[in-house]
Amino acid sequence: MVDKLAPFVKWAGGKTQLLHELELRMPKTFKKYYEPFVGGGALLFSLHPGHAVICDTNEQLINVYRQLKADAAAVISEVRKLDAEPCSKERYLEVRSAYNAKIQSGDLDAACAALMIWINKHCFNGLYRVNSKGLFNVPYNNRVKGSSISEENLQGVSSYLRENDVDIRLMDFAEALHDVSEGDFVYFDSPYVPVSDTANFTDYTKDGFTLEDHRRLAGVFRDLAARGVKVMLSNHNVPLVHELYQGFPISEIAVKRFINSDASKRTGKEVIITSYSPE
Image (tube, rainbow, N blue to C red):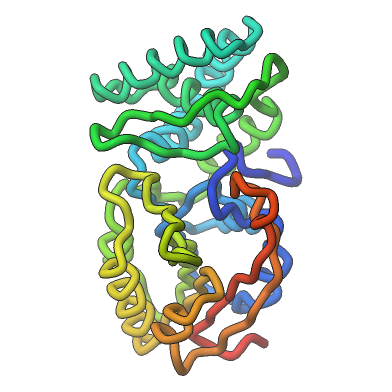
């Protein structure tokens, strides 16, 4: 396995730039690692814990993790085929249509995983967004050529997932925690609370992540904390988040938001909240 693993997709709210701050606030020791909103997995791949549960409600994303665990070579081979031809807007739309056909048919295989990885590198801002039918609808980013993957990284990710106790789950975040125990560590990186009334980052799955879901998440956070589970959560630095997690240690962190289409809005503050006092 390579020494340093990295996310294989760009994901809204990805935590690569926040890793140092997260690691500073992590518990020094824990039993099993849980990440119910795994996304690109930046913290997972930085820590590569021996016992982990990762989860997401995005079926396509979970399929990529499962395919990489099962047979990274098959995924790499399919991405190579896609990369062999230069991309254009017409080519992008053609591949996107092929990907949506896979979504419609429920064909979750290595080719589907490769399509998602390739499209992630060629769509606008690496955004994952679907319409009401669950079909991917993000436009082209004008990237003509270049490798969509680091083969070494994908092989390393595969080795990590296969050689360790990593359970990959497709389910609601609360359901994913059904077997969590005292002394385990849970990191929540949920879809963020919008920073304004017009902002909306709830389209990663067709069902979205509602205000009620955020309130439910806060309730789960408090329940886990009361049970002796070590919990850490990141979100936007907005009043609602402070209200939901009142009473817990909250650190404010300056960040860059690369995925925002408006460059003037690509800076801001996030918060890291823990159920324990950072050591």
